[in-house]
Image 1 (cartoon, helix red, strand yellow):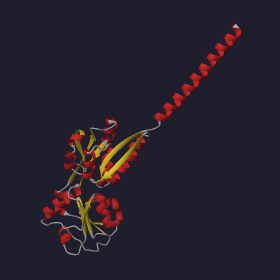
Image 2 (cartoon, helix red, strand yellow):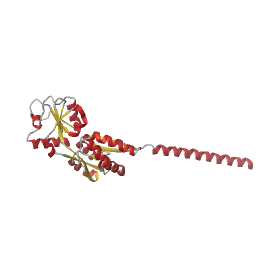
Image 3 (cartoon, rainbow, N blue to C red):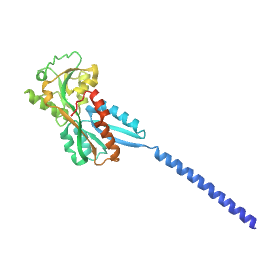
Image 4 (tube, one colour):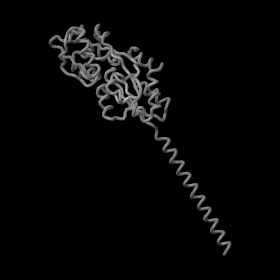
Length: 259
């Protein structure tokens, strides 16, 4: 009976060893799977930053292959409202300082300015309405579109109008500057008040009529890490990319000024 008992013990030990190997393999596979899921960084950015932030998104992901940068691009006031309501933003880049100030309690530390921008008039190729200056926007017969007043580009438009000693009676007020630009590109509008960077990004789809008064109504763009950032250090790295040499180069090539 002893030999049989010993054989039983050996079989039991072999069974346990096999089970341990299977369990270890399962744990290893699970660990690899968990490690390959990657991380997400939610960047809320003003619509006017679409082109340069798209490039910075790719640059950041190349440095961090396990990170998926997700850009939420919209009017700054819309983004600010989303953040105030608890949206999962890790980084916020606004087109003006007032919108950033409105969500200061939701940010971690002081926002830092990283770019400047100013308004211009976008018109369809050939300028069919013959817009020559800001005052022409009030001339009868021209269809003009601007941003909503609570959006930074809309607030800047009203400031420029005040500096020019005139007023605006737009055909429509859009949620962000890209919507204004699109109205001009599709010829739904004879003119739109957008940022100079938007005209540059649109290439030959629109032409520009510059506004001298716009230099006195320049927008400063701040960036900050959210106090609710899932990974504060990762969010700070993206902020630093924007503030650093590469960010300045990309923004400069897109037509933005330095603060």
